[in-house]
Image (tube, rainbow, N blue to C red; front, side, top):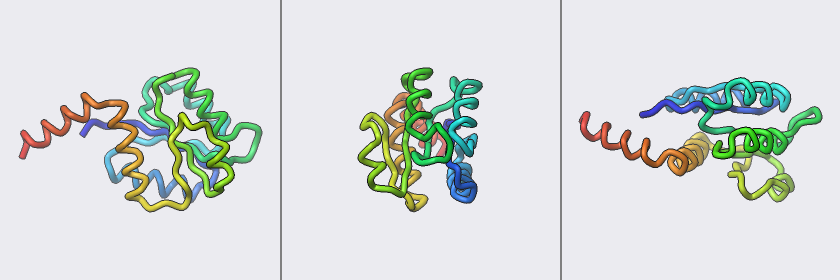
Length: 137
């Protein structure tokens, strides 16, 4: 399996750690940010190495998850974005070009959403990884 890098942005440290653990167990590299400002810095510094942005919509401070998503997409137009929220009113507010996960969600729901987004972005890599896995059996 190719190793993808996911930036996880959530002000809830426990939730961010839980998502990080799920992603790392599944073989992903992860970076974490606890605020919109931290996320912008990481995107500016390492954005070219990111394969997915997973961001909570509602965060304290002036920069929320939608702001982070818009900044990331301007800098890296092909970077997939999945927004998260426990608030249904925020789901309606998000731009429809971004994916969405309603909190709380089960680990399998998270992994399915991530796999769907990454498969859409990297279809050749996914196909190659599948062939290699079969060849190795």
